[in-house]
View: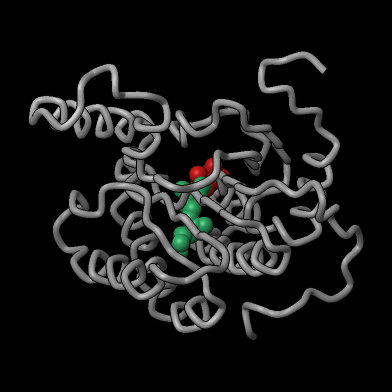
Length: 252
Ligand code: FPP
């Protein structure tokens, strides 16, 4: 099945005038989805990848500028060896299987997170991630950011270190460090601010995701487990976003 193409049988078409420019998704609930079916957690992650394919396609079809997904946090290494292994296997399979089509559809892939610090034994994954970024870097379609070995606090500390180094080298003075300069030192450099954060499976947490970038983001939490999050569920989230009154700290 092609991952791109127009969706059929759409129930509620999102209001294209009020679409978020940047959507960030915490894809939660794979494990529970699998357990409900008496299956191992890894079965849920496999189904989660299928859900992800649909959401990427739909984002691209709608003309959403940037989509950031939380694939693997710096804390996720604490999971069992089997689960981490399965997730890393899925990741490699994803980049091997989908890259041609993503590239054809002009998707620009960026990995947010520390690829270099991934544990030994994941050299193939590291190479695939770097190759995906390199191959798609000039694409002008959907900007797909995959947060992997990612932590929001770590990202902020890393940006502070980068700027401190530049200051020590005499390239900038502390007063030069504005919000724009700081944002440029984050993994999301050049991306629009996050407008909408979607979290599946009902949990109401940010879980160290895009802490700086979500300053004025709208939150949407659904009880739907990630593998069941389809285009209709996504459209519902987008419709809820379209109704929000965003004030950015002002009064309206
Ligand atoms: C959270 O569900 C999900 C994850 C930690 C992994 C999400 C990853 C994928 C959907 C696939 C990998 C991505 C790519 C790009 C191939 P959970 O396991 O915490 O679920 P639970 O809360 O029900 O236990």
